Length: 418
Image (tube, rainbow, N blue to C red; front, side, top):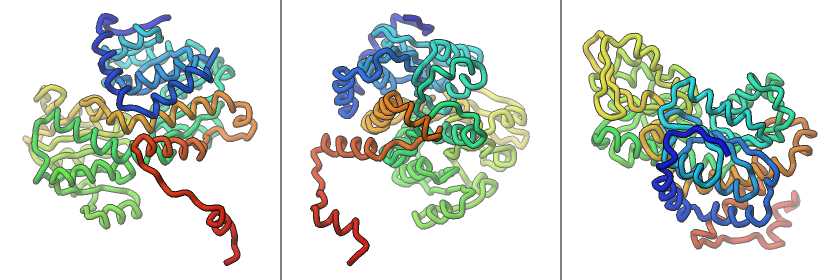
């Protein structure tokens, strides 16, 4: 075992956090028991880069129960919880991560995970996949494949695949219905406002909230803002999504106009420079910006620091930037993921579904790598069987029963004749 963490003595606090989420993640509980009996990862090294908090830690333990030799790092310098990392090390896993890592430290940590020569990669944002392709290509033949957790990572994978640069298959976990319909909408919606509220201690009701992007995450953020009593404005580049936002009861306008009236700004696009110089200079004094996309490029922090005449710590995890027009713009968590850099991430019950998809998809790629590679596809959809199985297990844990098609109904739906 090897590790690079802040303080191994913090493990008891981390263990309590993991125990709490475990009792609220029945899907993973069941999968852990199955994996312990089946050992689908026996003899395999699994590299994982996901936001390193309690729910991720439990996923790591489930994979380890399945026989995996785990090499774990974070996917964001501000989302790693040091006590959770210590708990995993205490349980015998290899962990390289700590909170508030510098760029050099973050790169070293993910490099150490790749140097373990993984057979399966579980990524969140594409950092492991990009690193092994760009800096350790000699290790690629040992990789059976992997899974990608989030929209941003999938965008990067599809771009690599289009250019013929992706050299092993990756399952697009985020595109599974049991992931994006629930994790992105309900999980992001709740956790973003949890992070904002606990960090600012300000009321949302009566404020103007600007949500940049109306994908599944944006829908969730806007819905929860409306529930908290805000007037919601959506900015979009897609006319269909803009139309959806209008029909859902929200105002739609360009960022340059929304900037003039917004009190809170939340970016959820997966793109860069969504809030830039023009928007900053148009904002009201005291406007608060945060980001719920994977990378810290949606709120253009480099440009904000460049145009600011002064900056100061206004409150824990909130920086104030005074502009030449005399107004001050505030940014939560340095423009990094607000729900993780300023909170505990998605609720356990939501991540139960997402990580169930991850665990079963990792098992699928480990057992079917040769067949998937022979098909020529390097970006792979989660098999519908896995998606449906996770949904059926989840509603069963809720005590919900649904109808089943009769043989006659199945015949009717499969026939073109009336």
